[in-house]
Image (cartoon, rainbow, N blue to C red):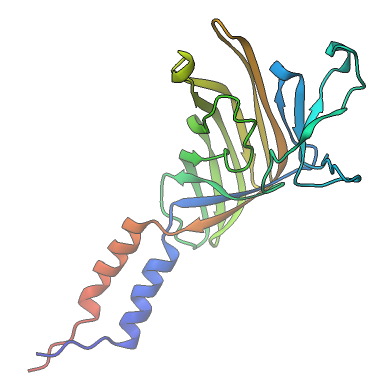
Length: 245
């Protein structure tokens, strides 16, 4: 017996793999005015507000600046730079492949299709690293995701999604355990809003208020799901086998 892979069978298998998907990869482009605040030190970082110790502006050194100069002793001007410059937004506003959305069905790429968004996964720490005041990176947790995505002939035409988002610090070394800062993430087919603003009290250290305040553009790429790809290939196997005595 001899097994032969035919051109038609290859095309069928490739088509099954290429068109079926239920994952959307998410790219975000944050506006230059997007900020991260650390109220415990009365400072913020902003993507387009760089500081260059040699004069001018260095986009990499986007923190830190005074929120309210009247709270300083002695008082200083608002937005005064403090410290030697920090890179809080290492990728500036280019947040590529920052997360993904899960759909409740496979995008087949034919006609009008509408799906519910049933899950999401994001990691914002590589984009907004903060100050490492806790000595730990933070994890991104998504819950209560809801929304829909519409496609026409495989192209995304509209999307709306809202989710509860938490940035979780492990403060076990300070006696606090996993500590979440919780807010919201909103997405549509062309924009996003990230808004997290919470004050947590850690006795005997006091209050720690952090805020993630970012807006900008969004774009999405359909990604084949491995299980769908496998099923497509298995389904094509009967077509790619030919027996010869």
